[in-house]
Image 1 (cartoon, rainbow, N blue to C red):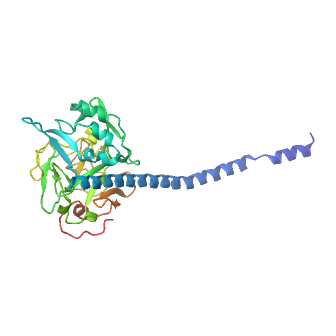
Image 2: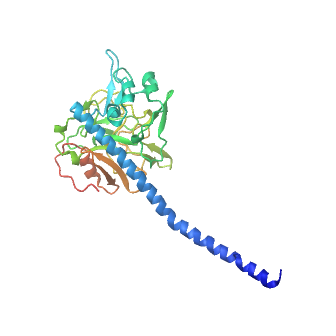
Length: 331
């Protein structure tokens, strides 16, 4: 092979500098495209989350149509001559309207501890590892399952709204040792041990919060993360073991699982606040992994993104069914 042929062959390949330039260009393209891809993925997850809440809203509307009332937010279960035990949460009642009629038919919702699968084996077997996709936000970093006794149950990303801690009519009770100055209200739509009827919602269905997203971590003063979700350690089935409805609700050690009373702003992540904790504080905030806020369902079945900049007082008015106060913009 002569020198001219060798020169031609060398010119057909890449030099080291050319290769490095190509790698640099590709790296820049990846760096530019990756945020766009991540944004698109989060937009898709957020759309799925909103659709989940839409399904929940339609299910609750169907429940109201058949029962002439909204479901009880959380209820106790008491057999004759016994102390109250944990009954079911509002999720149980809407199952038939969420394509879960078969699961609903397997549940015993009338006997003691029906909402606490560790003490109700039949219900534990019925819900064990049953996935209900509409209960979980795909953006949430929280594990979607809890093990309760021998059974594994979904932990929902969404809570029923019981009212506001600054309720205009003061329908609140102190709740839940160790943070006894947490509050639980009955001024909203999904409340403890009673059902709300539509004529009671004088603020209008489009202006009253029904369900909100709570599906991310809060952080304490030492930087330790704690999960904040709907059903906490008991999953979606648990209601409460407390009798009564605020302002005469139970005692200060009775949670109302799967419901929340609005006391803090959207996106509050400070764990060291009264009424917030991972075994289900009554005032766990609306919180999500979506940038800038959380999804929320209103009684008219509309789903809207609540910005973290929404004023707390506005949020509390939206959480109250009959305060009679004109509500400013929701965002």
